[in-house]
Length: 160
Image (tube, rainbow, N blue to C red; front, side, top):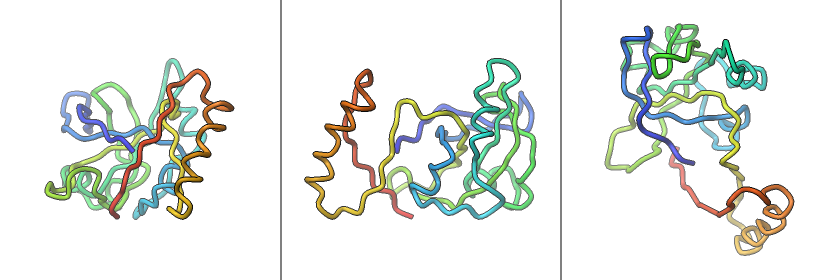
């Protein structure tokens, strides 16, 4: 999982706070086992709403650190109108428990997750059993699904 820097979100177009950001789909939280502590997850309809050419509307999921940065409780955050990068209107749909996505030496940073199709990433949850066989399975996947996309295996460890 790659979490990107350089995002901002705020309650107005001009009052923005710096946050980390990640594009997600409806399976992301389940696959990564990130705990949703308030409201609900992203849906297929949310992805459709965010991908419209004009009139896109986003549903955001914030982590606890982002909620605290705005001075809210998780319950208060739900339904708040927000703007990603000062331009993308939407509202907070859910709040997740803080999780480490960077060095364990750093505090967890504010994070916004927003719906978009993950054309550049594929997360596969594995148990770790029979790892060589699991890794070798990527060759047929590459041929079947990713013939036009550069495909490599990157292992990420998420500490919840």
